[in-house]
Image (cartoon, rainbow, N blue to C red; front, side):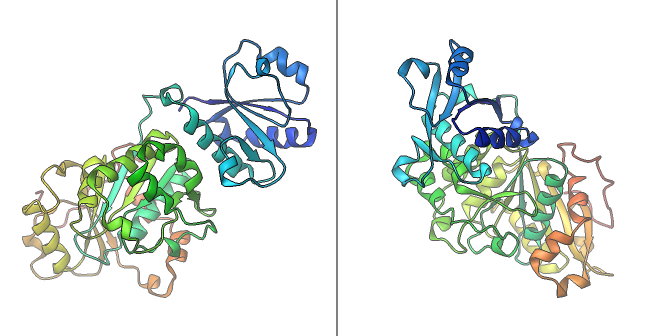
Length: 370
């Protein structure tokens, strides 16, 4: 993403210093190029004939003062009604939300988003799927997301399960993001501009996500086109290095659509015959469709005990890693498991083709390649 050029012109010297110090943060300097003025004459001298993106100001300016800006946003010292948020921004809010709102305003009004997109930017989309429930894909996907975030990567966690447990892992006190379904289904052209304002960020793991209610009716009616539209919009923000998708253990078309567009898929097998049988049946009969490139699937065996079930060698899966059953996890909450894990995320990252970790040695114990 090329930097959005921000200019702040304010009478408030303390606010200018506060804003300046915050913009030094590397996360912000990657997205924004900021200039800050408290003197209107200095502002006029330095912005004349220089094309800029967004001006944020508490001054009343003449048309000639703002002619070089694509968007002018007024600073307000009182909270704003929803209808006013495209022209003004509330001054006294956390700057993280402040900048997210600025990005939303800019995306909303800029008709040519290519001016801020870097077409060489590559976002890695990684899906987690299992042919049967209770295989542990949610905790594994989040452990990987957490590890990637710890390595300085920008990560978005997208849960496509109808009955999900995201609230057990993330404690962000933010309003629900269900509005994303409205834009996805009824106003898709505005979805990209709304992602900044609709997403949440988990303070402990630094993972971005949508705070969606469990069992929304909208999830069940998602089409393949809408799934692709949401993933494409997340990619087009160019804020993320990795988009991790937690899929439901069903044959719904949203799962096949997500897997088709993913760069890599972690297929989680439970260490029981039912999980193996269901997964083989899905793959042998193309029950998720025939457009899924099987070469991008990583088969992971989870909850491994001392011995495998009788007849395990008869199934043809190329298992890339096996994850031991963790007895102590039976006594932990889901959130504690995620926060305390220092192994699973790193182990999974070794299998990514993106090169985040050196490729791990394939674990082989009797299964042949499909």
